[in-house]
Length: 480
Image 1 (tube, rainbow, N blue to C red):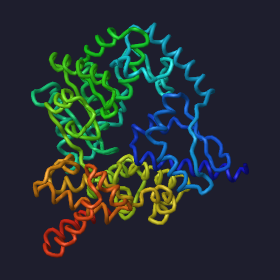
Image 2: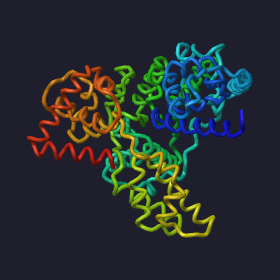
Image 3: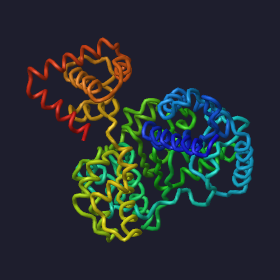
Image 4: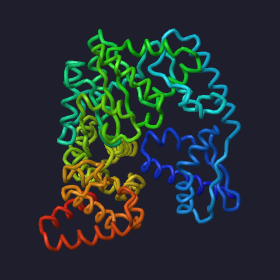
């Protein structure tokens, strides 16, 4: 194969990865897609490699059709995708696993959680996945906190002010009534992790409080390590001895029943002992389908705080603060341009600004609107509005103050049915999804139900100026 063809395949694969990352989120992407290695193109079939059978089978079941669809969109020469196991990578993983196992055997204190056999049984030959090789068997129980994430540099606005206030309250008075547990939820890159780090840093600054912070991903794989080293009781005792336990991205535990079981008992032990628990997820406890009911109930019994999507004003405030801290002059029109173009993820917004500032420093030219469009053309292209049905549903339920589960429920009360019809109407107007596809996203409804909703909303918009204004406002917010 010519070098130009290889380069084209690599470029196509990078674009596919970016699209999948947008679709599945950071946690799922790191767990599954990031483990894939690009292979060769043989006639019309592209080969992708994974290090283990468990990972290969999972990716094939969950993402196989989507991978094939994306490859066909990217390259007309690719019609089929084959997922295989890379034996070389597998051998490296086996060596890594044995090294981790030895570390666990000699560790006197180590981890934060456990995972029982039925959560690990799918790992062939009792192996840890490759990404579990990053497990740190250290004497402290916490993944290091990022000292940049403080309360002082968290930009507060209407979408996050309540969550910020709750976080501050817990940092000042941990385990106070009504605030234990503290459950923070919201989309990717909106500040959940920042607030958790800020709480941890403030508590640790006192010097007499033990804080343990980790992602749910780390929780699970440290549990695997403790199970394999037969040191579960040590991990339980160490975990339940901390003053504050923080678990980030709890949605990762969905479907992992025994890990949920251990977390539930740990949760009860800590709360009963007057210790603080802080959890974050992408949805509220009531919307995390797949969690055990008793765990969902416990998570919702404290303080639940939502971090909404950023407003234009908040994005401007964040950019102004970051630009000021950098010391590089950035024209207001550039900040406004970025705030309009990158709307869903604060991390990417800050990354775009950092990239602009670095470019200006390196080439010795000031930041301008023209240079912004040139330097960030790849990022801005990726952020061209691709409205999803999930996004439409979230915006509609927020606007009408109903629950996200109402979008797929069987409830026919007008206060629920009308917003659901409006969401279907917007899905038809703003996405390329077919009527059956839209119906499936609304509780597996028939395509005729969707068609009726679309026609009904169109009729009502002609009759009711107030409804028409609401629909147009929603449409504008989704497209902006």
